[in-house]
Image (cartoon, rainbow, N blue to C red; front, side, top):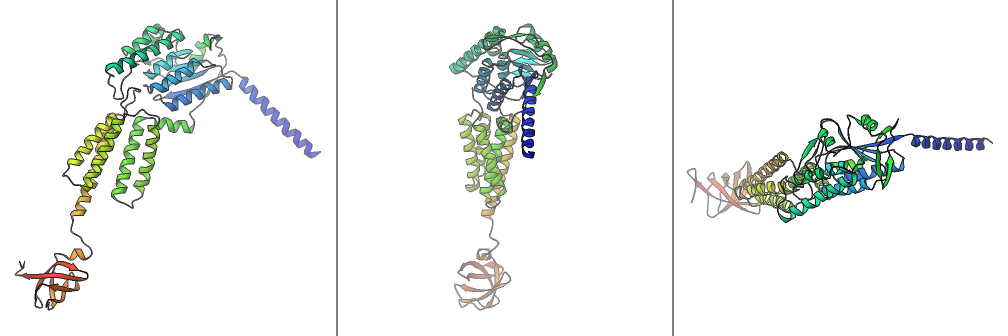
Length: 436
């Protein structure tokens, strides 16, 4: 009987928990995710996950709080595709004040069911550029511009927004403030915060998967969701500045380990950094010319250590390293760029350390031995047992067997000129000078 009561009690607890969970899900709520940084595969995965979660838990809408300078075009296209086909309303709020939706952020904002901006924000400048910020020239540049312009236009038309401005944002890199964006029908709402956004959006009609849908946010609770650990790590690695610094740290660590075997820590740390950099290269667009130049630069700096060229190889390596670093993420498929101050600082630091180590290695190779038999060559000793031609000498605080080309009397000064096994080869020193 006691066991039966326990089972019934557990069943009631499970049923109660289920009812509580259902009532919680039934309560009106919206999901909120924040994007602060470049658009990359981690952000793409985060938004896709957010849309699926909002649909699954019955959220009234998914709000994307956006502040981005731009990012990868491929990731942006995937995000837009997910937003246009979402079965739950997606609202984009460019905020807080001071935030912006640049480049890729324009397309994401236009693709929202409800587009909003906070006071003191801006949107625009979606012209496609190379990784270094320069315009893509020639036929390829024209193709990319035409495609991006039509992409922007189609999104605006789908959401009933200003298609002409969307085109100009791409072709002429126009950018406007939130008040102008509202006047030009680029966005729907200017809201100071999330609560203000929900209040103004309540009762609006949107097109949800081809069907009219009325937004209802009265008394809706805001549930904020953050990136998973995996997404956070990938988001960090997808920053070109972080990726570049990891690569340089990895190369420097391995260089120190190879030039000073047995130190261990630089080799371990360098290997980890280099592997993380390679992982980030899987999601970032690379210019392989830049990668080859970096490899050449490292090879020349290493060559300076083994083939001293009075700085020619070293300087050439630093130049190749600098050009390769500037070109590393210089592609037409993104507007990501490594900060030039980071490039010059990293190249200067790595170059200086490698050249310094090369110089020390060269000095070590040229220095006179201080230990072993070789260290005795050139030393001046005194004959203690007449060399006829073999005998004993006192040199470097020790007695040694010695051999000379001819007889040398005791107490004479001799210079060590070589050795054969444990026997030193010597010659006479006369008047403080070595005999010829």
